[in-house]
Amino acid sequence: MKKSRNFFRVGFLALTLALVLFLTGCTNGLTDTTNDIIDEGLNDIVGTADDAGVFETLLAAAEEAGLVDALKAEGPLTVFAPNDKAFEDFLNAMEMEASELLADPRLANVLKYHVVPGKVMSTDLSDGMKADTLLNPQQIEISINEGVFLNEDIEVITPDVEASNGVIHVIDGVLWPADIVETAVANGFDTLVTAVVTADLVEALQGPGLFTVFAPINEAFDALPSGVLEELLDNPEDLADVLLFHVVSGQVMAETVVGLDGQEVETLLGETIEVTIEDGKVFINDSEVIITDIQTLNGVIHVIDRVLLPQD
Image 1 (tube, rainbow, N blue to C red):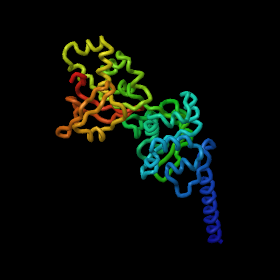
Image 2: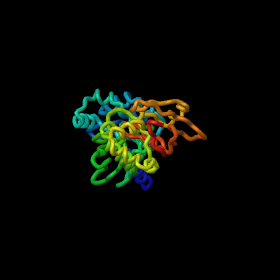
Image 3: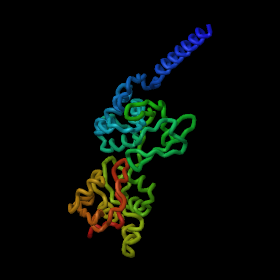
Image 4: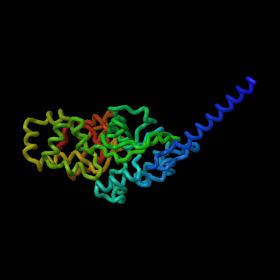
C-alpha cells in the first residue's frame, strides 16, 4: 500500500504542476491594453508586435523609416513600444496628423530612441539607470516609483513581452530625444550655444529637418584671433553666417564623411567646405574632426577643433 500511496502522490503532484503550467501559459501575455499574445515558438519583434494588434502606428512608422529589417534581425534588442493609444495622445498633443508623423524626416531617429541594444528584462531595470539606445549617445533615464517610468513620465504598462530576437516593453507615451541645441547644451558646448542664441538660430536648429553640425569645442573659439569672437557676438548677422558655415543639410554620418575625401560640400550658408583625409584623420577645411556621430532628434553633430570661417 505504501507503493500505491507514493504513486498517487507523484501522480497528484504531476497533475498539479501541469495545471499550474497551463494556467501560467494562459496568463503569460499582454494586458487588456495590448490583447493576448500566445507564445507559440516566439515570433520576432515585428511579428510579435503585429500579432498584438495594437501597434499599427508603430509598425507603420518602422516601415516608413526603413527599420523593419533591423527589428527583425537576430539582435537581441529591447524595444520600448508605444501602443496606438500612446501615439494617438502624442499626435493630439503635438497637433499633428499621423500622416505628418510618417512623413517627418526625424522619424527614424525617434524610433531608434525607443530601441536598446541587448535583451533587457524588467528585472534588469533599476532606479536611476540610464539605458543606451540605438540613437547613440542619447539615453533613456529609468525611474522606479510604484511602476517603471522612462524619462520621468512615460510608464511601462506591460513589461517583458518576449520575442525570438529580444523583448518588448509596452509604454503609454512616445519618447522624444534631445535635438541638436539641447544636445549641445548637455555636452558643454557653451560658447557655441551662446553664439547660436545670439545669432537667433535656436529655432532653426530645432526644426523638423535633418542637419549635420560641425561643432567647434569651446577652446576653438578661445583660439580665434583677439577680438574676433567679441566682434562676431556684437554682430548677430555676421555671426549667423559663420554658424551656418558649420551646418550641412541632411544627416551625414562619419562613414559617409570619410567617403567624401577631396570633395566639397555645400553648407547652409551657400558656401562650400572641403573634406580631406590625412593619415587617417578627417579634416573639414583646416579643422580636424575629433569626435563623430553624436546623434540627436534632428541630425548629427561632429566635433571639430577649430572654428570654420567663411573667408577661409
